[in-house]
Image 1 (cartoon, rainbow, N blue to C red):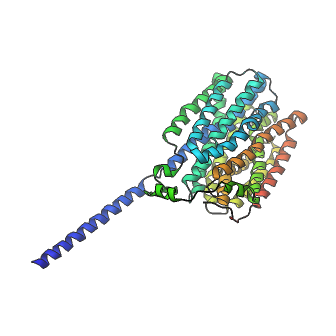
Image 2 (image 1 turned 60 degrees about the horizontal axis):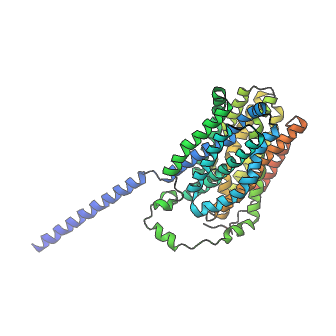
Image 3 (image 1 turned 90 degrees about the vertical axis):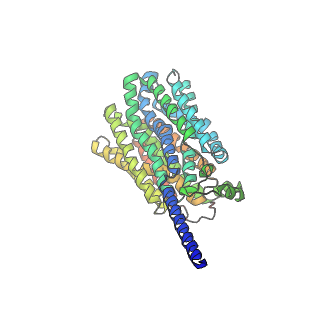
Length: 443
C-alpha cells in the first residue's frame, strides 16, 4: 500500500516537472518571438534622421535658386547661412549636446531639437532680409545638432552591441530616404504653393511627426525598460547598474590624447566637407551645365537613392570586417568619383557619378559612430561623437561656402571639385591609419 502511494507520488511529481518544463519552453518561445524594443528605437531614429536631417540637409538646397532669384542672395550667401549657424550655435551647443545626452538621455535632447527645426522653418517662410535668413539658419542648425546625428547615433549604440552595424544601417536609411524624397517633395510644394508656403509646410510636417515619436516611442537606454542591448531581458538590471563602477570623466580626456581620435576627426572632416560641397551645390552645378531644374532634381534623387544601398550593405559589412578599413575604402571611392564631374556635360557620366558617390556617401555617416565606438567604447560616446561631429561639421558647412566663393570668383566649379577630391583622398588615408589597438576602449 505504501509502495503504491510512493510510486503514485513519483509519477505525479514527474508529470508536474514535465508540465513545468513545457510551460517554461512555451514562455521562452513566446519571449523569443517578441520584437525586441530596440527595433522600435531604430524606427524612431529612422524618422528623426528622415525629417530632421534628410529633409533639412538634402531638401533645403532645392530652395536656393528661389532665394537667389527672389531675395537676391549670392551663392556664397545662401550657403553661408548654415556656416554661420554652425559657428555661432552648432559648435558650442554641439559640445554641450554630447554632455547632455550622456547626462539626461537622448530623448529629451531630440525633442528640444525637433521644436527648433520645425519652428525655424515656419518662421523662415516670412523672411525678407539676409539677416532674417542667417538668424533662422542659426536656430535651425541648433535644432539639427540636437535632433540629428549625435543623439541618434548614441541612441542606437546604447540599444545594440552585437548587431550595432546592422541597426545603425537601418536607422540611417531614414537619412537616405529623406534625401531621396525631400528634393521631389520640396520641388512639388514650391510649384504648388510657392517657396514661402513650402517652407512652412515642411516645418509643420516635422513638428507633427517627430513630437509624437519622441514622446511615445523613444527611450534613451534599454535600462529604462529593464532590458539589455540586443534584446536580453534582465530583471536584475537595476541592481547591476547600481553596482556598476562609475566611468571616470577622464575617459574623454584619455581618448582625445590618442592618435586614433584625431585621425577619425581629420578623416571625417575632410570627407564630410566634400560631401557637403556636392550636396549643397549639385543642383546649381547641373543647371550651369545646361540641365533643367527638373532633370537636376532627378539626378540628385538618383544620387540619394544610391545612398540607400550603401547604408544597408555597409551595415552588414561593418559587422563582419574591420570597420576602419571599410570606412577608408568607401572614402576613397567617394573622392575618386568626384573626378567624373569634369564630364558632367555627358548625362551618362552624371549617372555613374550619382551611383558611385551616392553609394559611398551612404556608408559614411553610419561608419563614423561605429569606428568611434569600436575604438573607445560607449561609456562616453555622446561626448566623443559631439566632438567629432562638431569637427566634421566645420567641413560639412565650411566646404560648401568655400565652393561658393570659388564659383563667385571663377564662375566655375572645376577647381572646387578638384580640391574636394584631394581632401577626400587625404581623409581616406587618415582613416586607414587608425590603429587597431584598443587601449582606451571603455565598455
